[in-house]
Length: 360
Image 1 (cartoon, helix red, strand yellow):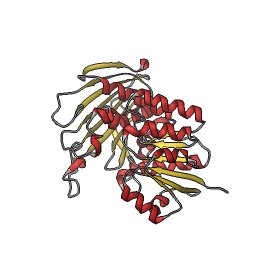
Image 2 (cartoon, one colour):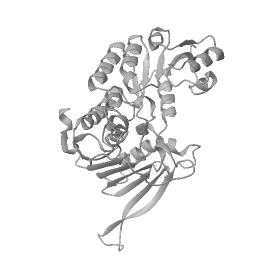
Image 3 (cartoon, one colour):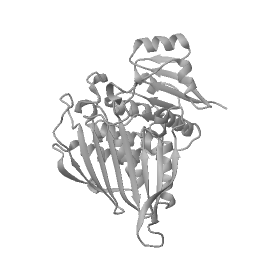
Image 4 (cartoon, helix red, strand yellow):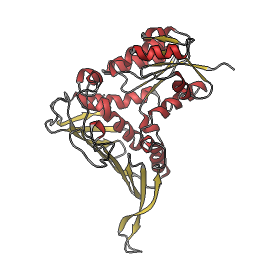
């Protein structure tokens, strides 16, 4: 049986390492990168590979799937070119710097009859799916409140090409980072009716977009949500390996309250606490949440991968393409989250702007 042929664009390493990251039944046939030393290493490791610094050569070559790990401004051109070349494509989020670029990718996907995967891996992750299972099982009842707090020390000036700090490279912090949370909340709570965004004046002078924000979310099912995030303060968890740089004091916690119970999540500590409402005193109609169990992912080799497993999601995409299956999340659904993120980034002052999500 012939193997599923895969090419990689950007972030390439040793040929052995790249091959080890592929599912069974997949074959590495080409690599592309702008770093000449990485290409020279690949040529030395395996002269049979197509090795190039021009992604159009990958788009034209004979292969089945392309996995791209490149700056945001390149996503549209790489995806459309490879789709036109008859390949399935996996790209990092966001799909594009503008909504038009995302629509062009969707149009190219439909025309090619191929699949596009977008790296919104939190929804697919072990943690994301475990929370979804609890909600859909009805264990905590009907959702009433969803909350997310995400605080970190900020991206630094030496980020590659300014892609984490400039509107030109990202369009804003929601498109670059907040889209993960927006997509998770859509997965767990359902469609948004409207969102309202607030932000204080920036404290980080090298950011071109807001370094803090709070978003209020109205869900179609009547639930309410709140997403608060900042890049201007340390939070907790400082250790010997987290004293400097973008990981310093990185806090990421969530909670969901339903009519029967509560879910409490610490993403980086990698656990989910489940609580049920119990009568107190016993036999009365007075209720309070009581701990039931913990779903603990801290035993993983990398506990952060419980919610943030980009490598695992790419592996899942290639496995599905090998087997002729659609991706875990269709690109059209990822685009719905992207529309909300883009709309939030488009607000000029973030001083209470309201967006009707149904009109996007």
